[in-house]
Image 1 (cartoon, rainbow, N blue to C red):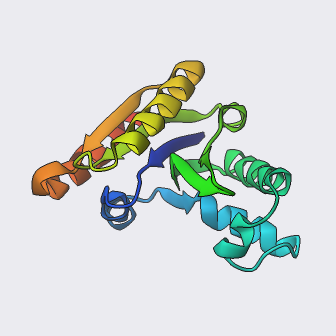
Image 2: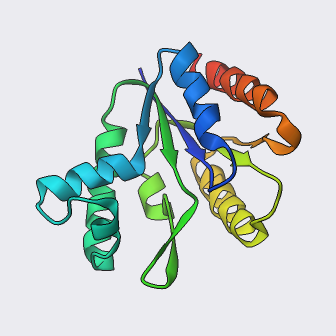
Image 3: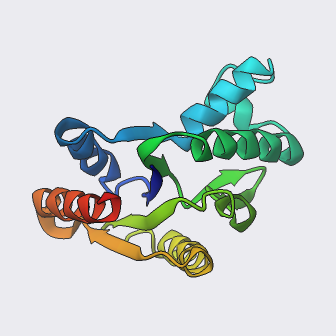
Length: 168
């Protein structure tokens, strides 16, 4: 059975320790969209670093992202996909998973937004808008996991509980 849980966090949200807890306690495959994209770029001999890849023209970056999402969609088992809500590129903000790409993840079981203390309100609103739209389109839940106030252990447990339920 193929299932994908999509995890989105931004700098300071503590999403990496939350995801690390899953790696430690569960046998789910954890992948990062950026790592898979970089692997595609390397195989195409377009870039060897994330910085180089981000400087590629938008159409090449889109092609790389599309192939990466195709690879993820083909993965078997329970997959936890880590990505970002948006990233700066050429002075513009690009979604980590645009609407046209999420359509390829029809095995998705939920979006998980790792939230923080609200310092990045503009990014939070944009991320939640993108994720809400995609969750509605795929008819899957959007979970907001809160790491505010030192509740990292609570956030880890909540995330793992949601994943276990989604992957059951």
